[in-house]
Image (cartoon, rainbow, N blue to C red; front, top):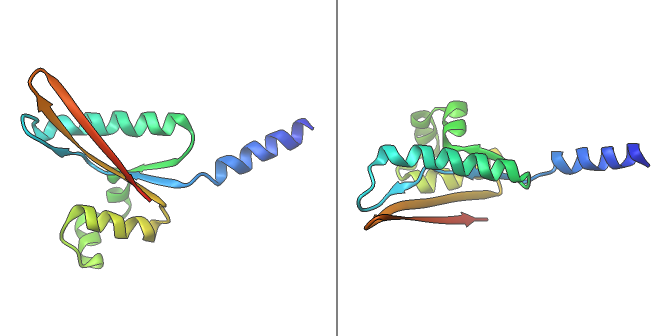
Length: 114
């Protein structure tokens, strides 16, 4: 029984769907340099939940090289490239979003595409 549970747990972990966490768009009042640590925190949190095999756009860029990717895909907008690339990598989901400043507060908007 114990061995069966371990095998099922291992199989379940291997079959997790892939999710790419894209870089955030910086909205009003947010410097683009502020979005990178937020993306890292989101990536780490989603990974810790264990439901997905998580790749960040940095992981994808490291695998393929962003400029080479754009040339091969023939696309110019990052979001459309990432959507096409996710299919090529076998990632079912793509998470994108934006970070904006509203007075003293920040608004984080996330969207997951299937």
